[in-house]
Amino acid sequence: MRATGIVRRIDELGRVVIPKEIRRTMKIREGEELEVFTGEDESLILKKYSAVKEFSSFAGEYVSSVYLSTGYTALVFDMDSLVAASGDIKLYKTGSPVSYKFEKLLEDRKPILLTGRELVSLCGEEISGLGGMAIAPIISAGDVMGALAVVSVKELGDVALKLATIGANFLSTQL
Picture 1 (cartoon, rainbow, N blue to C red):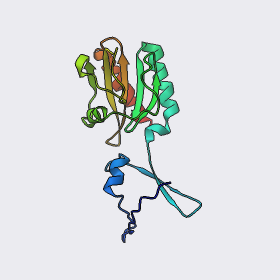
Picture 2 (picture 1 turned 120 degrees about the vertical axis):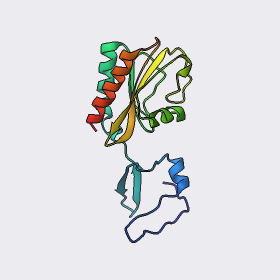
Picture 3 (picture 1 turned 90 degrees about the horizontal axis):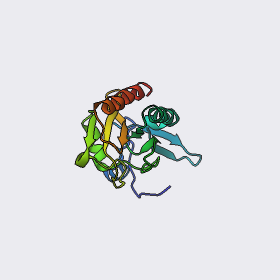
C-alpha cells in the first residue's frame, strides 16, 4: 500500500472525498461503485468494483460458445479491462486495459459496427489483419458496465452486430 500524503476529514454524513488526482489516476468515474474492505491493521481499503468481472467465468463460457457457433472472436470487457476472450485472433489478453477510443465509443451507449479505417484499438494494441468489429455496450440499471465485441479478419455485417447486441443484452441480465 502506498501513502499519498493526503488527509481528509469525514463529514457529518460519514462521507469522505476522494481527491480528483487519485480518481483520475485510478479511472474512478462519477457514480462508479467501490467495494469497501477493512484490514487487520485498522486500515480501510476501497477497491473498484466490477460486476462484469464478478461473472468472468460465465462470460468466458459465453464467448467460447459464440466462437464455437460462429467462428468469430468474441470479447467481453468491463469499463477498465478485457474480462474474457475466445477465438483465433490472439491480439487480446485478459486483463489488458481498454483504450481511450474504445471508452469513448461506449459513452454513446449504442451498438456499433466498424470496418476498414473506422476500426479502433480495443486494448491499446496495434490493429492489423482485422476486417471488422461489432461492439455492443452491456447496460445494467441504466449504466454502461462494459461491452461485448465480436471481431473478425473478414468484414462484418448486420448479423455480427445483432450477435453482439443479443450477447450484450443477455449478459446485462446476468448482472
